[in-house]
Image (cartoon, rainbow, N blue to C red; front, side, top):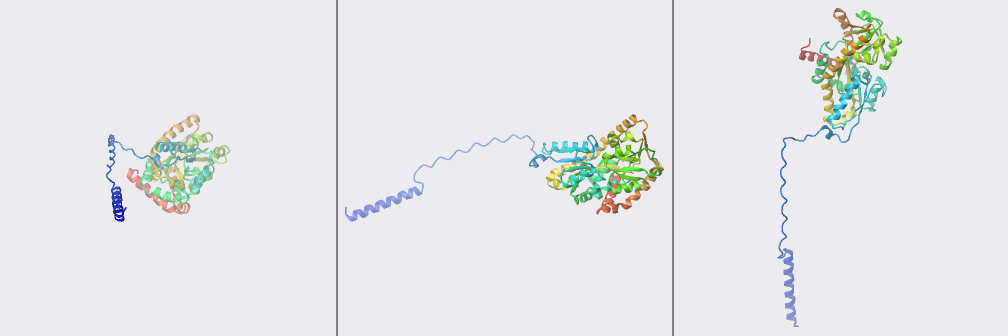
Length: 383
């Protein structure tokens, strides 16, 4: 083949190759693949008019099993209402918050259980203003005599808790000691039992009476001339039986359930102090919970004040009658008139000493509570 023909052939082959490359680069002349058909649109969900709301259970990652140590035995106020609280929390959290309640004596005495809650060994303690004062002296303000009205005390307490400034100051004091108070509840008026009649302040002279462990309660009963003797709850019956003490002070339900009435003939009501329980939670545990769960805990106890007071008042009426029917020699006496005014005059002298007894925020919490009580009485129309 001549060189000229060979060059021409090479040129033609090159041009053909370039054309093929261009066709490939542009997708060639092949038919495009058919596009996939769009999926049929979903039918819109039928509107029911209801929206699914998140529950408290949805906010709890894993089941919680906190423990509550009660100051009182099975069937008494604190243990009953602690169990009611546990039922409520199980219901609103779909069972994820499962509280276990330990009645008095199962985890130690009244001194021990408050410390267990402070240390976080148990998450809760249901105690009173006196025994918890070893850790929070400001709580003793609730033990001051003659600061609550004789009539409608539970309503006054509810107003103070829901509308006043007291709970905020009380929580500050508790938090200094690793605890958080969830509420304050009325458990009935304290009743004095004795083996001699008590009708006047003079009848209290030398009266060796068991009280709860509290510096303020000691001062209260010293103001009447009594000989106050702190003693553990479980030791009272033996102390009365052996005449180690002359009498004791507790609400009616405790006098019945602990059988103090078996060894005491006289019941005296001076309307000095309502017995007030304080459901309390370990601060570190409380702060670890979702805010909505914390609020539910507070709301439960605020809303429980009136129904629990009605429950215990009805029980007191029934059990007082039962004790008097069982032992007709029991005499129940309410101090009134001039004799009651003598008690009030003596008891109120202790108010002046509270700032020295009531801890770092003693004066603040006293002024706050007294102001809240006066505002409550004004709002509720109580003289």
